[in-house]
Structures are given as structure tokens and as C-alpha cells.
Image 1 (cartoon, rainbow, N blue to C red):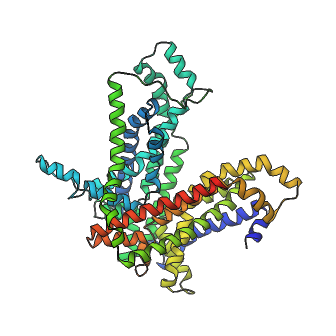
Image 2 (image 1 turned 30 degrees about the vertical axis):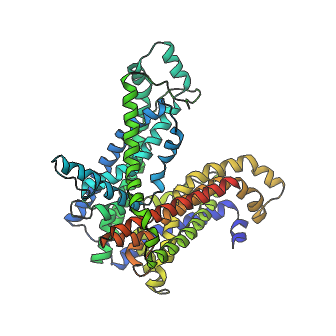
Image 3 (image 1 turned 180 degrees about the vertical axis):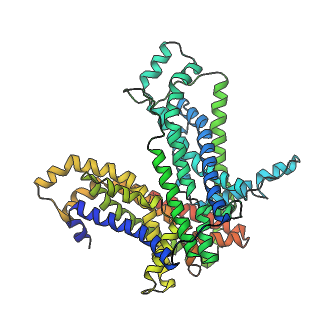
Length: 514
């Protein structure tokens, strides 16, 4: 099969795959609507979910971007032991299973967490991690590191000559902020805000675990409720269309909202500006310490609580672990295979629509995709037989856009540097794949595979609808939390986190060594 796929011309194979992907995403939505005999109107609670989705996404994005500014500035202008490791750790929450992070946040901010223990000690009202405040807290936890990394890149992109010129002119910290840093922030912050806003628009697991009430229901959670409890397919399809519309509008807004900083050409400032002395040293240190504590404290709390109990976990948890690992590996292989075909096709040029099709999963609802596949396949397979394969397929598709971001630039470089040479040597098909494509794209393929495996390992989406008899590890963790077996849940969370990071490391490391 592989020989047949790679024996086709790259563009033809990519076009066929892109068309199939678009048909799958749109076809499943149509299948759900047809099964319901049309779309349904939305009631007041549905529009309240739409409003809450927009409101919490906007507020979460604003808080993430604003809180990231002092942290990114401190990291840009300070050098200290462990800085590189800390910057690397800022990427960890992206592959951290959402349900594990929620478990950690509950351990710190929950009713019996350290924060409320301190508030009770000094006689202040307790903080509730459930409801809209918990949803926003979790979103800031996940997206603050992403915002810091993006803003830090903006600081490092300011040419080094600008800082040297500012120093020679005797600029103080206020002058540097006015002439260099604020123009950069005006260019970077809108894109950062929109990136986080788009992520929060499709929130499901966070709202499922920490929200869920009438005042804290997102569109994706409303789709889940329409499927799971009301079996109102028409309303679910309508909500799916609304979610696609919101995401497309946000993505369209992202194309023109940023303001160029207009610094001109120069050498990128990897070392960053020279940090000012005085009270600003303390302010920068406080920003770094507070951010590190906020991000690492929940992870450490759940690790300390759950690590000693891992050997005591019941057999069904280990069965769910094996099931999740196998599903994650299959999803990763499927995702990078699809991504490779699309990236090679896009690299041939004039394939904007293929790239757009590869990004479509960003705007789709996994729950609508899964339910649509069940409707389309129910004449051939039983629901129990379809649950795990459909979950694997959906996980592979949802990870595809993130893998493409690393594969497309590498595939274009490969074609520019080696395309003519391969044609002159008549290197095609499996030979070209084996001797040229895979060795040269090993690093981005490893990164994409690790990302897909980690995301699939921690996914708590489609599986919540169907596979209750064969739970995955995230679903088992969620069930333990709902039954108030918090010690077993903490051990399960540590196991899930460790396997997710291990899978990412193995794929990424394998790509680097190839």
C-alpha cells in the first residue's frame, strides 16, 4: 500500500487526501444533520453557551497575553543557571494531558488544596475551582507558556543593532520600552491573543471537568450534552456549524489584525537586551518565580500525591494504559503518514487549498466527527467495534495540523535542495521515500509523531461518548475523579503524564538520531 501511495505523483496523492479530508469533516456534519432530518434551532441555553464560549475565550486570551509580557521580558533580559531548561519546560503544558493538569489544579486550588487551606487560616473566603473561574484558570495555565514563548520570540527578533544603538544614545529602560519594546508588543500581542482565543474556543475537557453548569458551558460541551444526554442530533449539528463559524471568523481576523513593528533588517538578538539594574532585577526575578511556581506547582502536587500509589493501581487501570498506548502509537503513525503525503504535495507549490484542507481539523468538532462516522458506518460495524478505531482516527486527524506546521517548511526545503537531483537520478517511489525523503525529514517527522502520540495519549474527547466498556487511561482517570477515588486518580494522572512525555521524547529523539 505504501508503495502505491508514494508511487503516485506527490501533488495527486496530496490532492486526493486533502479532498477526502474535507469530505470527511463536512460529510460527518451533514450525516449528523440528515440523521436528525435537518438542523434544529438553538434555545436560550445554547446561545448562553455561545456567549460563554466567546467571553471566556476572550478573557482567557487577554489574561494569558498580559501576564506573559513581564515573564517574557524578564527571560529576554536576564541570564541565570537553568534558564534554558525553564524555557524548554514552558512547552510542556502543550503536551501535558488536559485531565492531568486539571487534577493538579484541583490539588492546589480545590476545596482541600493548599490555596484554600491558606485562605481559611487567615479567615478569607475560599476559592472555588469549579465554574467559570476554574475554566479561565485552567486556560491561563495551559496558554500562559505558549504566550510567553511567542512574546519571547518577538523580543529575540529585535535586531541586536537596535539595542546597541539605544545604549550608545544613553537610552534608559523607559526609552527602550517606548522605542523598541512597545512597537514589538503592538505587533506580537494581537497574534498571541488570537492564537489563545482560537484554542479556548474549542475547549471541551476543561469545561467538562471544571465547568458544565448552565453558566459555564462551552459550545463543544453543549455538543457533548446534546449527543450524550438529549440525543438531539439536529441541535448538535447546528452547534457544530456555529463552532466552525466562530473558528473561521477568528482565523480570518488573525490575517490582518497584527501591526508590523517595522524594525528593519538586522541580526536577531538571541542574547536579548542588557538587563537594567536596581529594583527591576527584583521585579524580573519575581515574575519568573511566580510564573514557574504557577506552572510547576500543580504538576508537582499531583506527582507527590500519586507517585507512591502507582504500584497499588487496580488491574483495570493497567488494561486501560495498554489500550491507550497502542491507540496512541497507531494514531501517531497514521497522523505522520497523512501529514507526509500532504506536506510533499504542498511543497510542489500552488497548493494553497491542500494546505487549507490540512488545517480544517482546527475548526471541526471531534464529537461531531466521531458521531458522524458512527452514523456512516453503523450498517457495517456495531458501535462497540467502532469505538476504539474511530477514536484512533479522530485523534490522528486532530493532530494533523500541528504536525503539518513542522513538516511543510522541511518538505519545501527538501524539494528546493534535492528535487532536481532526485529527478536526474530517476529516483521515484519507495526508493525515493527510503533513501531521500525519510532520512531528510526524520526530525520533523519525529517531532510530529511525538506530538501526535502525546496528544492522542491524553485525549478525553470522542471516547467519552462511546467507549465506556473499554476505557482509555484518560477516561479511566476521569471516572476515578467522578467516583471521588482521588488517590487512585492522582496515581493514574502521574502514570498518564509520564507515558505522554515518554512517547513524545521517544519519537522526537528517534527523529533526531535518524
